[in-house]
Length: 366
Ligand SMILES: NC(=O)C1=CN([C@@H]2O[C@H](COP(=O)(O)OP(=O)(O)OC[C@H]3O[C@@H](n4cnc5c(N)ncnc54)[C@H](O)[C@@H]3O)[C@@H](O)[C@H]2O)C=CC1
Ligand SMILES: CC(C)CC(=O)C(=O)O
Image 1 (cartoon, rainbow, N blue to C red):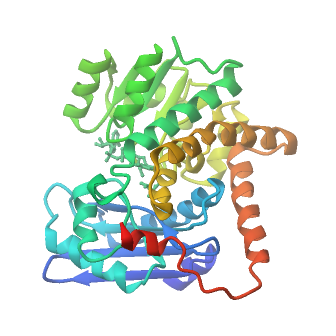
Image 2: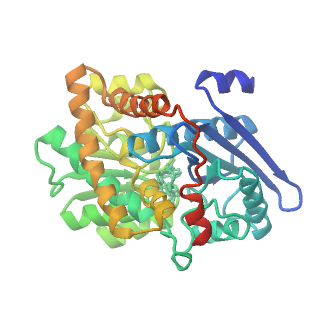
């Protein structure tokens, strides 16, 4: 892999390879763009098949965070970490503490949080070594686990997408096919069930499926059957690249709206959804609830303020559909433009030097 060529392609600022033999830590921190502020993005722990696969994931996810944070109106850049390893077997305290020291070494250019495979307890271990971590235990004045808030944002974003597709944002009686019933999708299913939606669920973890079947009367299907269900809405809430050449022809839904990062395998798959008349709620907007919530910690966490901001996801998604229609472009391009334009505006307005520790001081006083 030609790493510098990769970095040039989407103008990545920095890739940091972290190795600690003692704990077995192998991590890649990707800092994509810090025009708006320090890069904030979660840490994913996953059993990657190769180092190339891990690097690819880190850079795709890091760039996604630049767009997510910009579109959410946050003064934060984009970054992400991947730790190579099995989250069920390979975790230990020394690993997260070693990782915390690497983050501290970046002196605030990167702030972390949870993602797939990491938990509040892991963030607490990182916090032993650095203040540049959010989503730690509420006892420290933090916002805690971001997943339920991501779920709430995805729920209201799904309603905005339903409004676009059906002219009514009620989800009562709608059938939603949910892929992955993990930390975000379980509370999302709870909101949907409460509103009277019918649920079809799948997961590679049978216990997770069973939980949703028992709690919400969901219908369980095999992982490879989720795309072809007779449903109104497909909610991808597991891993990325699931909107691709194989899956698009199977879709019978009118809406794709879920929490997973990097849902489109390639950008052309967003064009394909558009061509088929499927309403696509851009992933980095509909799943921004978690980062909006943890980012509030930079101001001294206030739940009410954070939730008000999360609720703006409905209007952001609606606005994206309006821009897409006005300019005759697919929704994913409209969302990217919205983010890129904000970054450009801020880049152009930063002509004077100003020493600013804004946000960092609050994290250290927490
Ligand atoms: N947790 C959060 O606050 C946020 C999460 N996201 C994204 O949302 C997605 C889900 O995140 P979490 O719920 O936190 O992760 P999680 O790890 O708790 O849940 C993911 C679930 O998907 C299942 N899964 C994995 N591969 C699958 C497959 N091929 N078919 C069916 N199920 C499969 C897993 O067994 C697991 O139960 C991820 O893409 C994550 O990056 C995005 C923004 C914030
Ligand atoms: C989990 C969030 C707090 C941040 C993040 O990494 C994301 O939104 O994907």
